[in-house]
Structure formats: structure tokens, C-alpha cells
Length: 76
Image (cartoon, rainbow, N blue to C red; front, top):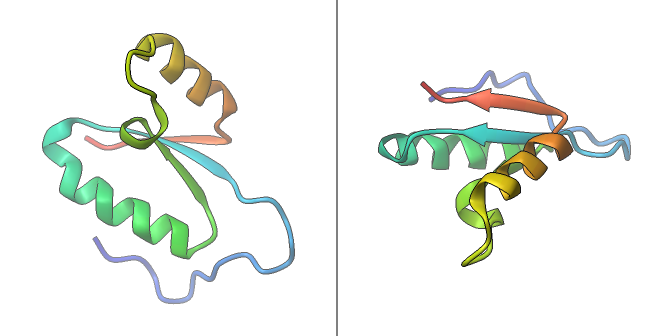
């Protein structure tokens, strides 16, 4: 994945946009690169593998993450 070089991280003190990333486990390598690229540009990625606690009802948790997100990215 390549991101445009002219896209800079926000530096004006504005809150970061929260981005929920929905993906298939087979796309994990791409999602790791996307996660890193978004963070560098000042976004706050929300990915289920790092945000859901063990034994938590994953459907409720994912619904809550989606509700908190400013945007949703679907990796197909």
C-alpha cells in the first residue's frame, strides 16, 4: 500500500478521527500496514484484534466500536 506523500498528520490540535477497520483475517498483513499509515497521519484506527477484551461479546463490542467511529473502512 502506498499513501500520498503530501498527506500530513494534523498538527493543529484537532482531535484525531477514529476509524474502525473491518477486515478478513486473511488481509491481516495489509491491515497492519494500513493501521501504521493511518497512525502516522494522525488518525486513530480501531481494530478488533487490539480493542476487544477476552471473553467479551464480540458482536456488542464491534457495534460499540462502530458507534464510536467517525468513519468505517472495509478492507475487501
